[in-house]
Image (spheres, each protein chain N blue to C red):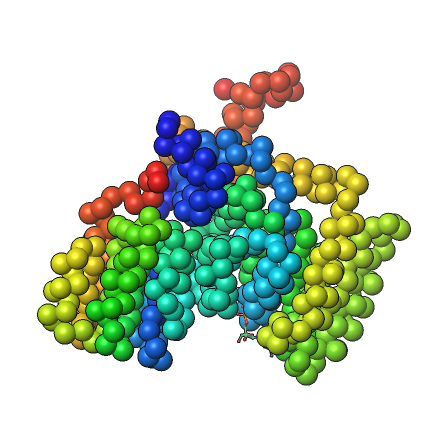
Length: 327
Length: 140
Ligand SMILES: Nc1nc2c(ncn2[C@@H]2O[C@H](COP(=O)(O)OP(=O)(O)O)[C@@H](O)[C@H]2O)c(=O)[nH]1
Ligand SMILES: [Mg+2]
């Protein structure tokens, strides 16, 4: 008991080791994390969370580093979470985003954590949101999450942010491709990085057209801006920050609460799903039962249907419509 | 479900500019299922220890070819200890004479591998050592 209290106290008193260890627990699905979170959850909410996603090599880490420099110049502290994929074969990962942020390491106003996507079955989104909660509670003014986009797990990670930057660059495909990949849908701000490279102007025009095509929204809704920068040369960073600020202003009067509320609801839904799956599958013999049924020649839909009917039939408050399905 | 992974930070302190060895070790450890944080060249002991603390790693691997190992290893160890990371496993490679190796290893929590070492062996050694230690991510 005492040790648990301790880590939350240490978090509150500005101990960076507490940040680091709590994130480790979150990643591992350690129950100590959930206990700690309920102690510090009430002090969350003051950090602005920015998700940065886009194809590999677009310059996300370089941009995150520049954003951190700009925030520090404005006396704001920054927590950074950099997610990179794990190998599905070995489970190992090489996490290299820190290299682009190296000079921030000795700045006490910056905290950088690398995270591997691991199994990705919702686990990544859970751990990433938890890590942001820890950095928020610690007191960082800005929290930035970098992920390679976009699979479902990465989508869940960035869409949990208050403002989502999608970073593209010339040479990595055109605006149409970006649209097909679903990246545009998640964007609050589109960043064309490497504006120093040929093809940047073309990409900007493509994206502006793509955004216009999509934006048949009622007046007063957010229009996704296309912003150009060269993170490599440290140019245009203020334009990216201005776009984030504009989005932040847009989310005032109730919109931010709604967005964050939706995010938390999604989080709870995923936690229940995850919990149910492991509980039912590993704790109540359904894995064995389905194996037996399949072995006896039953078709997968029938096996699943029977199991579902049984589970749903046992739920409280389902009335008479379902009772027939129960055993 | 508690799912622990071995996390390793690979650092390259000092002034020499070769990181091929460090990169090879990093990929071998990754291929053996570890999460490897790679931090690039010319790191100071403070930077390595600070990154290790933020990343909450179990292992710090140093590659030192400059001959400055007798200064750098103890400095990294000190900086780690100053951040409450004194018991992190410190693993090193490079051109290090046998006498120096023995002396550094006698200071504890340290294991050094000479230039000829099979990289698979390093992965195996780390894994066994971590198993021997049990849960590393406990209460602070
Ligand atoms: N020309 C140019 N190169 C850049 C720019 N920003 C980043 N890069 C380079 O693009 C490569 C990938 O950058 P990185 O930030 O690691 O991309 P990430 O994979 O999206 O995180 C690196 O070699 C960077 O130096 C830029 O604005 N212009
Ligand atoms: Mg990156």
